Length: 405
Image 1 (cartoon, helix red, strand yellow):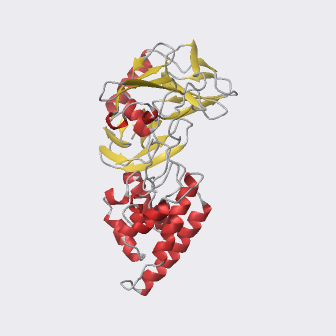
Image 2: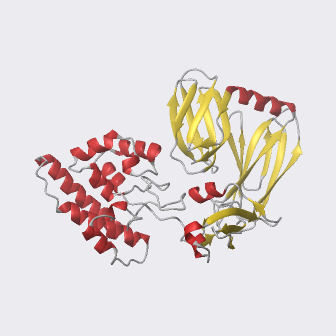
Image 3: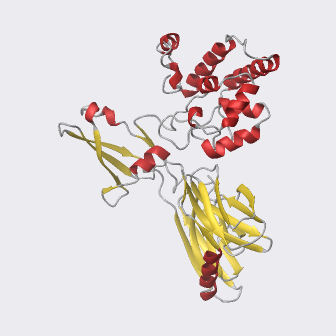
């Protein structure tokens, strides 16, 4: 219970109750927590509140009770440790976020999600939260008592492969199941093998804290203060990776180019897409054959029937495509990857502009209007590869971008 919410610790009544709890899963644990908190908050003396604050508080406690009973809580999709999610990738709000949205302040909830989605309330820099709490009859400490963290996508000592050939799995290693001295245990090296031998992987801490684990065999070499050693092995090989190939049938400086795309593995039938960089125009085919294409740089995308995808870049038409790509780079400079999901870019396009971000299925997932030549904004999107477009009337610039927390 203390891992779920640290404020269970230090109160004798809470510690006694927490020590006797037995629940089947994370959902039941969160429901028990919320129901206990609701009961506690319902018995607080409200002598310092006016009638309107009391009415708002009582109403929202009933809303919180319904939220708890429904049992639809955010999913921890990125972290290997229990972590708060203000609003998850599926649009599900945490308990506090749900109350803020239900009270008619969805704009505030969205801002919190964009800037502090994985923070505890005490670590957020949002004075508006405390002002909202006061209007609705709560203290900030009470909101902190409500807010839970959410468990990782896979349990300790578990490895789960992705359903997608090029996807990422889940791995939550349990180093302490080793016979070594747990007080002085050190992870000496992590190695990964995808069929070509064991090699050290320096991305371990990024994998561990973000929850993204590429397919492969993993081994963790451990050592304690007495120089005793042990090695743990985990397997998240998963499906055979996609094979995505292109065959350029005709090359021309006119709009007479043809290309045949083909894929292996995954789950047919496939859908193929081409995206031309210069005008961000999509072409779609179920056979993988495209004709009457103008010279230029293209992103090719394969999507299988499970909505798994793989992409590559294709150049058609020789010199024209190269000059097109160089000109695009001059007009749009962007920090890539975008660390902490923060987009930073500059462009020579003037006037009113639109920033649009598409996922690899071609769906619009983020928009923003701006007029300045430089831009630095957070985006509440999950880690991955996206297509970014800047439009200014007839001018369109696009670039593939990687988002990382």
